[in-house]
Image 1: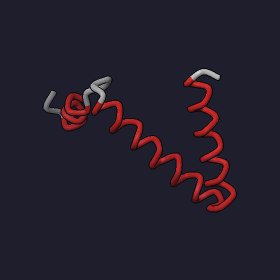
Image 2: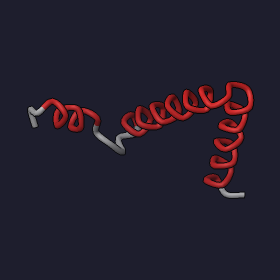
Image 3: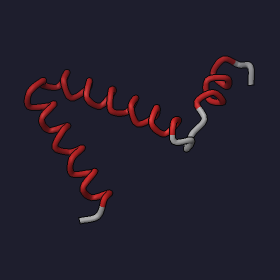
Image 4: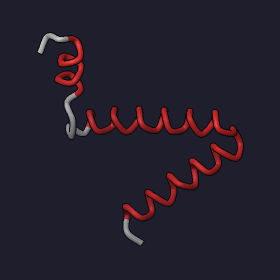
Length: 61
């Protein structure tokens, strides 16, 4: 099993547990927090630059 397949499987299981244990609200929180963590992780890995994105939102770009 490749690394991406394993990661996708674990994410799917985690979201399933969030839905089962927390209902739709739990699923939405899991998606929101997971997405936030992914963006922060990508920034720390230097795959994306959040400073440039935030400057463009502020109109100072």
